[in-house]
Image (cartoon, rainbow, N blue to C red):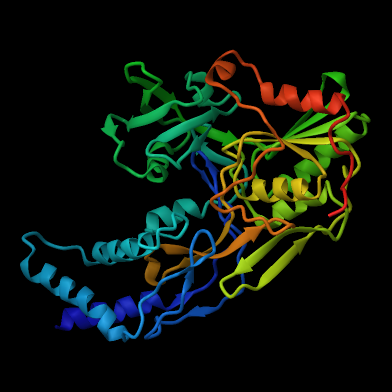
Length: 429
């Protein structure tokens, strides 16, 4: 009984959280996890006897328990706790049990963005968006059952080892990872520069094969730009991080000085980053004072985020490239530009990550939770979450295109600019 009292107290402490979470915008490179800016502290108390309705992924109210006291709600938990300690044949790790209980509670929301991170996971997730880490250098997709390579970074160990888009990691250093959350598999691929990791790769219908890669310190830019043929400027954003605005401003100043006929902004496979950076990026292409997005909260209230700086490229024909890897902060920018008819979206439907998470560290170093607290809406009030953005001009990128190093989406963007079909300024909202 004394053990029960101790853990009941500790669980109560864990449930009284210091709210220091930020606006998380999702997505990462291999070993490069994104966090958001912090918000002012607040407190979450123990749940009330009759918990209020909560907002689901689509913003609709979800059914809740009613007319049950906190003690009644927790009675089965403590019964299960005591039965496990009384009858289980092996020694128990009480910290692991509490972490498992919290993880299960958050998974029960059905919202994949509301989740628990143990201390190790939280440490990895707390790596800032500073553009460098130690690993193999590949953009990856963790949304499916297996860790999947989106594309190796240029001149990275992953590229030199021959990894290709679509490769699936099924084992790391000989250990099967097919039943492990891909976000956790990422951590196994990380490691100090100079060390080696062996990945077992499943590529299409081929027999699985091993690739041994020597890890390195990976420094990646947020932005790259160049002039294409026909005097068209091309800017690719890889993420929305600490250095993005400085890099974007320098890139645009250089390209705009060459008086391009049009501008292509490539947001394909950009998983997001900081919310404030997304607003800053939109500010380079829209007049000052325009709504970039709304945050809609549980009670139906909204907060508007507006452009806040002088634009470098608000009067040039523009196309934005998007695909299923375009997520979160990228969708904020693309959605605003589409609403204002400032640019045409070319490619395939975006990912549909349009919700806001608060990251809340738990007491006593017991990890952290992230909770969906708001939804993102475009300036016209369109919901991104779970739906994504439909492109104005749909163009598929096939596996054959990738293997042949063709880019029909980029080709279509160039064609639209040369044909005078790309908007050159913001139109009436």
